[in-house]
Image (tube, rainbow, N blue to C red):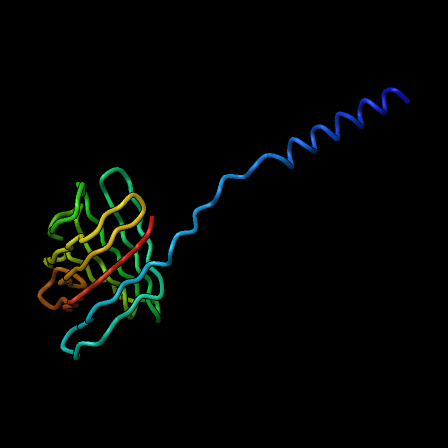
Length: 155
C-alpha cells in the first residue's frame, strides 16, 4: 500500500509540473502580399496579385516567395541586405523568377530589374520591384515583365 501511495504522489507531482509549465507564446505571422503589372510576350499588361507571400531570412540574404492563382509564382532573392535601399537584380545572387503557364521566366536570362526595400524589421520586409525576365537565352526567348510591383512578407 505504501508503494502505491508513493507512486500516486509522484504521479500527482509530475502532472502538476507538466500542467503548470507555461508554453512560450507562439508568434503568428501576418499573411504577406504581392502585386504587379504583368506582361508576357506581346500580350497586354494585366494585374497580378499573390494569394500569399512569405520571406525567408538567412544572414543578410532574403528570399521572397509570392504565390498567385493558376500556379503563378514569384521568387525574388537578394543578398547583402543590411538596410532599406535599392538592390539591382542582375547577379546570380540577386535574381527574380516568375512561373506562369508552365514556363519560368528569370532575370538571369539576360533580364534585369531592381528591388527597393522600403522597410526592413526583425520579422518583416516590404518594398517595390521591377523585373524584366526571359524564358531562356536564345533569340526566340519570350519576354516577361513585372512592373509597378509591391510586396510585404513576414519571416
